[in-house]
Length: 291
Image (cartoon, rainbow, N blue to C red):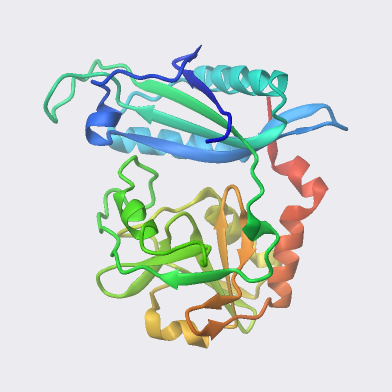
């Protein structure tokens, strides 16, 4: 594994208690985001920080986990990014894991338990897919679990994605997961979008899947690039009717798909414009929420 930094409850260490409920029960949540140092502007920041914090707050409320204060989250963020810069890391991935904390046996939790707050900082790694022209995706046989109460949230129970990711080799960039009704929901690490006749479509996230931050942003900005945006049920048989397909998450931003099984996709003009928007340096500065 590449070098990384680990901050646990404000201290630089990489070990947690064996009694932490995140380990025992997956009792917690996480957020993954991009960060960078802009040398010319002499600033360091995290992309869409406030949006990620907002989702942390929403998930903590739903899961009844004590929400760390914004002051604490900012303090830990600044501390680990300062250390990263001093270590020679100038951009990369920031991951926040919040568990309910250390507790005893049993599913019932103490209302007074204090959360474990973990910040992980990884250097940016350019994968071969960033330079490849052919981005291919495939179907996964493993179905996604339906739970309306947890749909859209980034909780620590990610076995659906773990099982699905074990199904294909590196010939494919991503695997697409369906629900029990054969509706496409998401990729193992991405949200998915389709384009047809300059209209944008994306699967509904109401019973399963993660409503990613980048997905939210694409939906908000779609009016500048597409005539209409619709959240729909995407059936397997309907995939062949779309003109273009792309993947999103907070790290890759927008990645066009060339082929999905036997279906070949084109890069529609509005998709090219959308990609250019997120690659534009001025947009990057606007998207950074500064330390």
